[in-house]
Image (cartoon, rainbow, N blue to C red; front, side, top):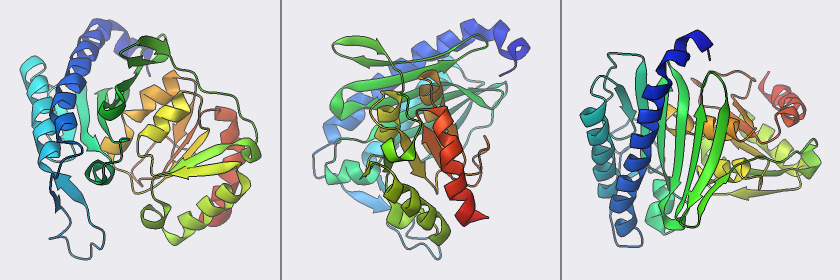
Length: 282
């Protein structure tokens, strides 16, 4: 982040942080009452040629995104908006928002309590605020990145606590996670994931964005995923980096156009992970 670009706008960032937290709370008031009900899911991919995976969307997804957008359009009408369920809105300034009203809709429909609302605020294209809100667990993970510092914290009804990743220098000691390796990976990516999974201490699946919250909390060490969209990724970056971790694509870069993501609580651990990926992907 360029110090001369963001430094004059810290007040604007703090204003957006306050509104973003209010947005997460408002979305929670919509999504949580719909959880563990007989809410129906429609298939967004039904009209897409060649699509072979059910891509669910519910009335709660749509209502929550409309709610989130309403906050932005009221308080920051010139900011851009990217959301999973509705059309993009171009920005008239350096600020933009990236929204996923229910990340983990499959889990939401199935009654798994790890779904989340993801909210990212970007300045000049870079995420500077990230929120992972877990309504069913009453947990909210927040990260900010400014010219002078990155920080992350967790908010619960019991209070606020700083987030910090844990050291882990060997894959053999790592706990790794992935949402769904059978569907999100290509054959080459699946082979790379399997090599790392077999080397790691053990793995957990089906976590959606909550896996990244666990890395930020020092509970897990690596998340490997693919087929991700900007609204899946951008909110995670300030939380992970504010807690001391690192997120890159599978080639070690900061661009996520290919949808690949690797998250490590200990940035030095990535030096041991990249060779596994390179062996399969090159």
